[in-house]
Image (cartoon, rainbow, N blue to C red):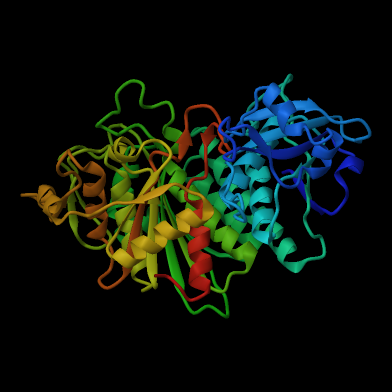
Length: 510
């Protein structure tokens, strides 16, 4: 993990491999020439005030994610200047915004892989900006190299940026220190979630995931309970058992409980943890199996959020439920047409074994409901329909309470995670009526993401506020990296869940 420091040192005298500065798309002139952002004054002065022109000559425009490298001026200890785009120049007296800073820092950190130290001279107006840059650096520097020769990207690969100094930070200021400490805890746990998502399914089955959770719980003072096949059978968890029936690796339900003596609210988080999803008997078509190790991203997000809450010492009780199973076809697998009796006592006719996530979540939601928390949020890579609706970078939010859905959306916006509120149309519920059981696990094809949300709602305890996050799109990035988001597992929803826990700690869940 990249080491972070706050620095008040003058940029020219900083010993580093590179100085990172910001450049924005200018709005004052018709030409839209790039504008050097605050924080880079010393560099601009060394270029006799012509840095913007030099950058423009080199092709820089200030567009978000753009990187321009140029030699550092004479007399600077660092040999390189890295100018990273911040996007549009803000209005007068307005800051660049934490998300723009987070993205710019992430791009720069990834660009500087292989470097020992970089000084980030981006515009910092307050502690929140410092926290955003710190978070961007740590998330952007992420790499997953556990399975590559010699690690660090293989024999010819580059190690992540080793150290980042945040220029303009205030080392003795409590707010700045707290912001960086928060960013470190959240980013480290989010990166742990990324590691889990990227781990091949032959090494991360339900039992192995549960062991990781147990180790982290012990380290951070979190109470943990793991239900294995025997305990799940005794307890009547038909959904989790039904999904895991076809696999040689048995299912697990993991409960993580972080408690605070000063807590006034209890937030329950439920995560879908399908460590590999073949579709079961309703086998996925060719070309849809290769990334299905990511189908436990919801459980990874919940796990990371609970540990982050513990590390931050939030004054709220947070319970995480990880519904873990491997969905495989075999002679013992659940068949289309089978009926499962869920933990709630309801029966479900399984019309499609590839609609398995809602089955494991149903049991975990009902288990979470028994503790009567103030709110439940479930997170899942649940439906391809949500990807069709919102694309690959935005997750959908459904809820049984409009105010809570808005609160979750606000939390996502605050931390920079693209999300969008979605409805739960009552007319779609009828499509899940079953002549054999209480409900079927499939309904109308159109609006499939909303149908899944309506199914889950059936297993939330009466009177309990609940939201459902379908992260099928942003959970796993199959394209190239962007901003602070790497290729592969992204850790989607972790930061939103942590922000919700912080809001709950302040007594606000609406």
